[in-house]
Image (cartoon, rainbow, N blue to C red; front, side):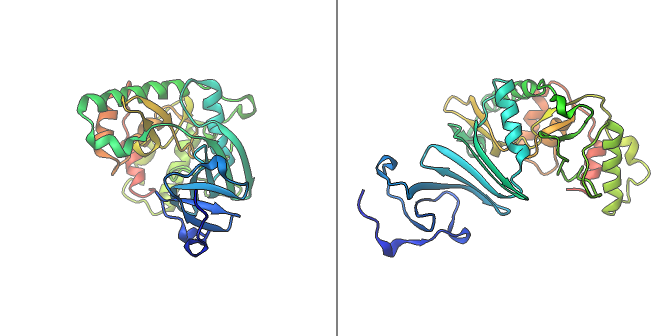
Length: 294
């Protein structure tokens, strides 16, 4: 590779990181255009190739030297790393393997392995109906596997919590009190949704919402954000990985289905996931809540 032209460099700064772009980063300070024939094996320790995979809400996802993925920034939590470790250790579901983590207050960094394949969101509209249904069936099969992950002994007594036992940040469930608390029963969970509904101005279902919400005595491990953007597939339309375990944890057994069926979701995907679902639930109460809590 030819020597870098100093005049081509720009500062390594948030505003200069554009999703989909690839750069050579030098001394953790400067970015240079990355040529197609780059060979990272020839690089000294102060240089690396970074590809910007995603950038939003003060979080950054990078591919580093074509070998690892780094997710860092505000709101990257220990619970996300713990979720991937649980799935990796207890199931055959393809997920990134956590390599190293660091957390400091509200900021975190997770280094993990790369999942091969193409994002389903990119390919979905180009697939025929048979391929789409096949992917949905594969997905429900994977969901059934992580639903069997046992609750760790240190979380005994909790009904709904993140993968590490910390409180949920789901818009329907986040505690209004401080310090925030996980939930210990289905009745507490329904009470939390109702409390938030009233607090944020819900009026239409003020008297009926408690009876509309689903009930469940079973809490299972849940991804909580299944969508085409978080699914990787190969050229044969086989799922190669599930990404973004930010909201994962223990929830009532209907929660995965409820999250997939969120209004204004990817319609075709949602319809086929509903068609292929092994079980469905009445979500009228959840959807009523979401008109206020979204």
